[in-house]
Image 1 (cartoon, rainbow, N blue to C red):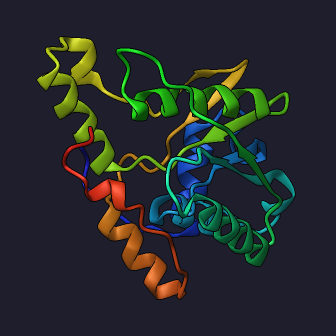
Image 2 (cartoon, helix red, strand yellow):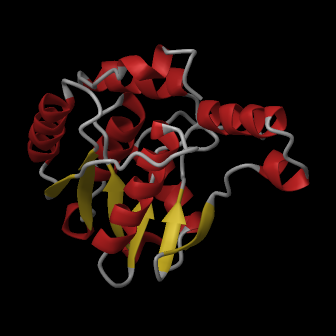
Length: 199
């Protein structure tokens, strides 16, 4: 990966999206917003861009898998409101599928709902970072994936009749948290992220 020549923030993100997205800066964006640090940094930086809020919204999926998931959804709604960003939450029940982990079933359902919720011409943004990319590659290698697994997550790909973009793949979670602290923004910490029993 190339070293970053500028710090993360709205200006960096504006230029990144201009190069990455079909339609560049004019694209309508929907952020998959969990309320965690990475998606909070993405949404907050976008909300600071002049004229962007009219073409930006946040979508939260509440899987109901944790006792605090309803509180997390309320936190995400409050934060989006404080940023002046339209917010939609969808609560779902994750079906148990024999032979499939609960996390994998939740991920499949989440992407299906995100795709169904996109408006025509809207681009879905997820806040995957360098850390997520490395984790994905390592897990794929452990599962015996070949070259396709090593390639990991693309920065942009066709999705639900439009596009899914991951503009933060070159940034680290540590950097995003530092930026959030500087902005005095709070985020959620999902305890499952620290659970080594889960992929």
